[in-house]
Image 1 (cartoon, rainbow over the protein chains, first blue to last red):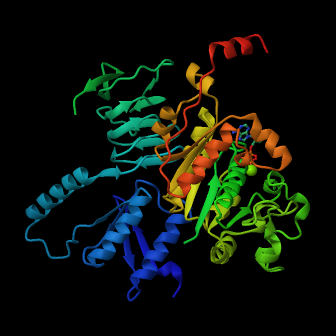
Image 2 (image 1 turned 180 degrees about the vertical axis):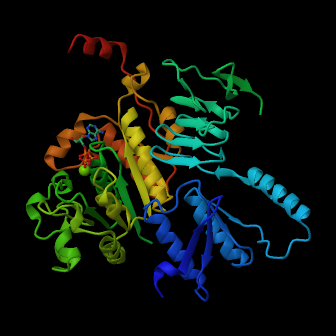
Image 3 (image 1 turned 120 degrees about the vertical axis):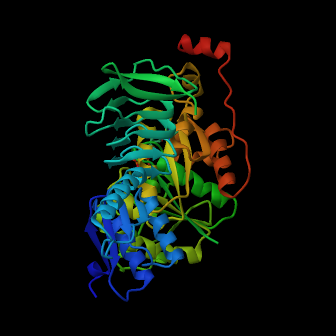
Length: 214
Length: 262
Ligand SMILES: Nc1ncnc2c1ncn2[C@@H]1O[C@H](COP(=O)(O)OP(=O)(O)OP(=O)(O)O)[C@@H](O)[C@H]1O
Ligand SMILES: [Mg+2]
């Protein structure tokens, strides 16, 4: 079997849908994915969401893949079972769709549970939660808001596709630049440090930074 | 159980080769069997630091291309009997060895040695990927200045991408007076950004240079601060819990003398 066929990926609205050729072992699947991730070909971008149909893998295997993906900054999760049953009524179908869309929005947060180092980048349409630092030379470009449970020294751009309600929070907010929607604020040349968490948002047409309690 | 350790840095010239040579001698002084593998093909100089240049017969490329068995290419140190060098070629380039070849070689070397230390070329290109491929863990060398720390940070990220999660730090060429004046990053600044375990703080010491010229790494000198700091690193690699040295600050008179250029 061609190794390319072992793992199949299909683009969806939210990211990628993954499936496997019938009859291949988990070892082969894992190896194949590992190679794709490590080839550095940009095949999987950091922050990508990869979905898998439920019951395709044993739980332990699923967990292994989740850890593997997470190490590369990729979210791996089950997709909702597809609606192939005939809909009871049009109304119910519409309501379901709405609910699903809402769920998606809530779900759509990219979680990065490590430090983003120089040269690493997260680019996503959703919001981003970083449990770690964002180092100088690292970059986050998010359609939604950005929450950093650590020190932010990199470049952060929230609301990158125009959402000026987006905000940026960090335990220690000392980036080179902050961008929200199409506003830019540069760090002062003599940065002052605050021991409180801070939040940057747009108020009255400019970026303001204020301390917050967490 | 043998360990394969890669010594790497990102930014060039921060002391990878110096560190490799010193740790090699230090481990050998403790009776460990050690081989130093130079992967900086084209720019080799580990042999110089060890004073072994004139004894090289074969090199890494001869071994990986199967022309000779690795045992034939190893050069034994003149003074430390359990220390060996596997030199590289001065005429080939980094593409002459690939990661798989180095992994295979290191697996053979594991059978014979307690420690395999790999001296990595600067940068994150092919030479880097090859050098790290076989390592159980990585030692990142940096200097207390912003650009070197940034490059170290990048390298740590690259190591993570290659699944090398066990990474330790050596900060080289520390100048206590400059740190004190705020002209150099201090250890807190560095740890804050890199957040990996630091196992070495080596002072800037001119004995490093003079000993290099004699082909006798500074770790074997009793009266050198850098030598003591490297001995401490060796102890920590061997699992000992050793506190970090504090560097004596210049006394008023020394400072006065420096100011007067004496
Ligand atoms: N602690 C120190 N004190 C003084 N000089 C030092 C110290 N460490 C290294 N040096 C000097 O710095 C120079 C560069 O060191 P070295 O060759 O070990 O760096 P490297 O990282 O291997 O460089 P490259 O990237 O070119 O391989 C050498 O001249 C060396 O003698
Ligand atoms: Mg070198």
